[in-house]
Each structure stands twice: as structure tokens, then as C-alpha cells.
Length: 357
Ligand SMILES: Cc1cc2nc3c(=O)[nH]c(=O)nc-3n(C[C@H](O)[C@H](O)[C@H](O)COP(=O)(O)OP(=O)(O)OC[C@H]3O[C@@H](n4cnc5c(N)ncnc54)[C@H](O)[C@@H]3O)c2cc1C
Image 1: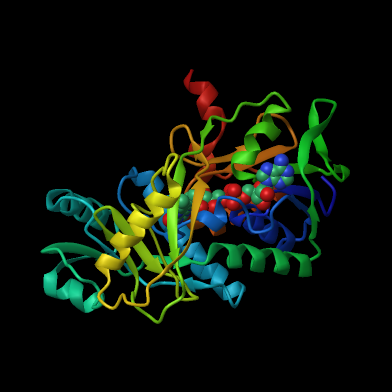
Image 2 (image 1 turned 90 degrees about the horizontal axis):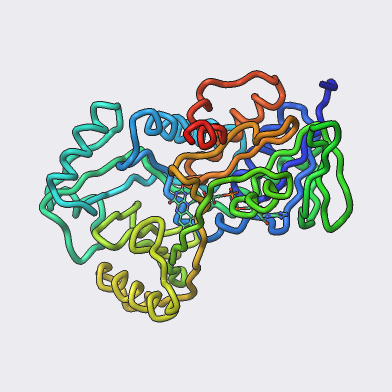
């Protein structure tokens, strides 16, 4: 490896931006190649930073570590639009909430059990409250496109170059990937790192590599900006919502949104009506727009991070990319530049899918 390895990062969403920034700060020569600055899934994300229910313990700890890495990143990159606003949650039957609180509490998650009055103190602007809810003060949210753009702009001050182009294939020499073939020409590098979200699949396929990824659709509604109505994240049954830094209430049937099928407009109107019904001071709440995003979701739900099956080729594709971005950026940059495997990434290798067959 040369003293200053050259890495091509394909993708300029939250994952590509974070990896490129960490690589550039650690002294690599970085070329970011992407079609859309700020990403494709990233602008459609609910962007809840969490280690919430539904995951096994090893993945809980990985996510919790990622939450801590957001704090580290905020210290290193002032101006990140990050809010540790906490999450109020009652989107499951009480027995399931209790089981979640018990399990995650034992794992170290800071969960409080709340009665109706305590929930109302946390979110006074709601029209209804459950008898029993949970509150996780350490959860937060980030404005993901602004964060990606900030990371990319700062990476450029560390010497990274951004090229707007479509990657159509990979350059191979002597059994190794040595560059990317793009709409703007061929670029060579010591490593090519694919962080192109769902767009990673066809790029990897061009080198004969299969990435088992699905892309479920998720509808999120965005209100026009309004004065402060919500203090934090609200996870009610069939309605997850938060207020963005610019004052928009954004919401899905859950954080991942549901598939609106052939009726996105009607589904968005119906969902927004539910938002209005849930907020007391709602006269000026107007639906501004909605997004239908496609969540890059590996077949077993866990991230794909690491060598992608050929020397010189690395992949970083995942759901919960907003939660995981600063940790994945840190670990992937370290692995690429040191050439040493980080055992924290062992559960997330692409090879687990072929090994399982
Ligand atoms: C509705 C929804 C809700 C979500 N909620 C949450 C949540 O609450 N919390 C959470 O942690 N995560 C959430 N996620 C998941 C999270 O948003 C994604 O995991 C994350 O945004 C993925 O980022 P990325 O950078 O990998 O991909 P993307 O944002 O999709 O970026 C891909 C990049 O690759 C580029 N690209 C693709 N193909 C090519 C090509 N051939 N040539 C050049 N460039 C290419 C694109 O232009 C883009 O720049 C949600 C996602 C959705 C859709």
C-alpha cells in the first residue's frame, strides 16, 4: 500500500459521506463519485437515531455504539443538525412494551416507564396519551441530507474530490478491482468502496458479485414548517413522528413508512390527517409534500460491511444507515487504511450469505 492510498467512494448519501469524511481525515486520497449529492434513500429517511426494540443483543450494542459515535462526530464537526430529543414510545401492547423495557434495560438502554401524566409532561402538545409508555431520553434524530452535505464539504477541505457521475462498472486487473468505469470516464484507485445504497446491487453485479438486498418502499409525509409542537420523537401505534430542525412535522405509519402501493397521494393525505388528529394546536398544520423512499435492506436485516468478494472492493450497504453512519465511517475507514479486520464488523460480512448456503 502506498503512503497515501487512493480510495474511490461510490455514493454521496449519509454512508458514503461519512466513510469519505473519515478516510479524508485519516489522510487517504479520496474521490467520491455519486449521482445525487445527499443520497437517494437518505432524503426520504425518518432519521431516528436509536438502538430500539426488535434486534438481537449484539446488534443493539453496535447501534448503541453508533449513537455514541454521533456525539463524537458532533464534537469534531460543529454544526451537525443533530438533536438528542428523546423518544416517547407506546407503539406496542403494554406487555410487549414491558418486555422491551425489561430486556433493553438489562442491556443498558436508558428506558423510563411513564404513566399518562408523565407522558403529557414530556409531550404536552398531543391530543391523546396511553396509560403506559416508555421514554428513551438518549435517542435522537439528525437532518440526514444536511449532515451528509456537511460531511462531504468538510471532506473536500481535507482534499477529497467529488465527481458527479454514474458508475456503470468496475475496472478489474489481475483479479483485483482497481477502479470504476463511469459516465465521466475511468477512474483508478487502490480501493473502490461501494456505498451506493440500492444502487450498489447492479454495480457489484457487473463484477459477478451478488448482494442480497431488498428495497421496501416507505411513505413519509412532511408538513410545512410550523412553530414548535413536538419536543422529541413520538412512536404511537401506526404513527411515528418528529419535528425537524426547520419546523416540519414528518411522519410515517412507523419510522420506516409503509408501502403506499399505487395510491401514494391518497395514503399521504390519510396519514397526514392522522398527524393532525394527534396534535392539539393543528390549525396551521398543512401537508407540504411526501416522499416514498426505498430502504436498502440486506436479506437478514443486518448491514453488509467489508470486502465484497474481490480484492480492492469494499461494500457498505445497510438499513438504519442514519443511526449507523458515524460508526460505519470510522470502522470502514480504519479497516481499509490499516488492512486489518475489525472483529466488530465480523457479523456484517457479505460472505455470511454464501457461507450459510
Ligand atoms: C422511509 C425511510 C425511513 C427510514 N428511517 C430510518 C430511521 O429512522 N433511522 C435510520 O437509521 N435509518 C432509516 N432509514 C434508512 C436510512 O435512511 C438508509 O439506511 C440510509 O439513508 C442509506 O444511506 P446510503 O448513503 O447508504 O444510501 P443513499 O442515501 O441511497 O445514497 C446512495 C448514493 O449512491 C449514489 N449512487 C447509486 N447508484 C449509483 C451509481 N450507479 N453511480 C453513481 N452513484 C450512485 C446515489 O446517487 C447516492 O448518492 C430509513 C429509510 C427510509 C427510506
